[in-house]
Image (tube, rainbow over all chains, first blue to last red; front, side, top):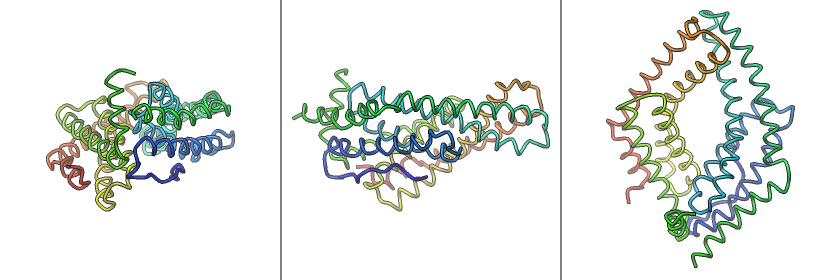
Length: 161
Length: 151
């Protein structure tokens, strides 16, 4: 998986300065990959790769959660919503792959489940595109997140001084 | 924000990234140790889920903060965590398949569900063995030492 792009960490610099410089860039990279994954012609593999990017983004936000205010929980929850729908899509893919092992012992059930998984896959793909548009479709919404990641932590650090 | 959160925020703001990373890693490693202990004592779907989450969070922190860790040792620890995660993942995969089969209207007595259930039992047994073995070998303490997080 190609990880999200971000500037290097400054190990001896204070945590707020690191978070303010790295997290907004990580968000921009997340938006860029998400836009590609939300295209109607995106392959399941691309969606799977973006699921891992979303996971990486969420875990990084969570790792710095302590530095931010309560609004950070809402931002993390939004990324988790994206991750959940992509996770559901991935579950359908993984289960379809698993079924190949059981074709011989339960052909009828396998066929029934396959049809169900196909329909579910389409539903999750559509749901992802809708959710992406709802949460990050507008530039204004993206700016709210990047500004928050940059400014909120700076405010917390300066309040400390 | 509550008083406790604010004081944690203030304390974290004073740290360098290196110090913060080490604290985060120590705390996540502690969580894995806790979940390992509980999973091998009383396994169950929820416990396995919690173990997976704890390992995933530690693995994520190892990745995010890789610059502060000794590279070869971190790779070794990640390898051991990956093995445990694969065992837990196999159980989860089967839980999901069983859930989807139910949603698809496949009877609980059908041959597919029976074979999935049997496979799940076997995967859980393997996971428990791996968790017990990690616990017996004092894995979390070894990881802490390897990653030089003990001080």
